[in-house]
Length: 200
Image 1 (cartoon, rainbow, N blue to C red):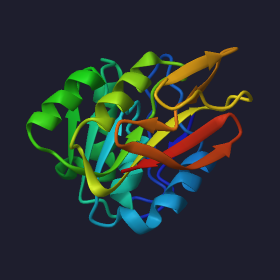
Image 2: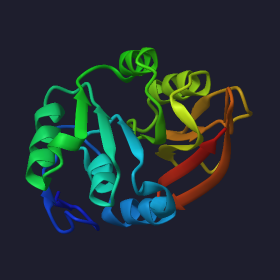
Image 3: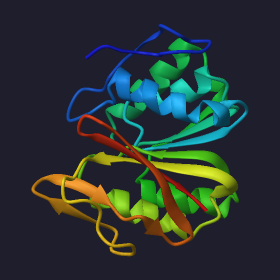
């Protein structure tokens, strides 16, 4: 699958995709996401969780983010993220944590890191998404004016009740409307892909 940076200083640069069970965002969905985030991107601190190829965080850097931190446990993906960062010229503006997301979040929290935008692109139906959202909802990692975006699969049955986290419905996944102090304020669907936006 061919991925490219959609806009910004690295527009048109090709991005490699790790081999294996990787589900990168389509260009249409990624462009729609960044059209929504456009007013927030410049000089932002961006956290890309379950980063895969790093395409989402790299898109943020291309559009003017100050820093992007990528978290990815898969050993095949981490070198690809660095290769994509080097090829787009953003390696000096990035850090990559080759750790489970839960571990990386605890380390970042201890470092008193704070982010303007946090994106979670966990495999659809993964309990790690809910675990990460619960942690974020009780942490200080998101700035007061920041936004958390969870990518998940569309569920025709709608979200579970607040506080329940999430449930798998026939292989399709949806997400709670609240995690700690985080509350959903917007949801956008592109095919089977849904972006749920949370803020304090």
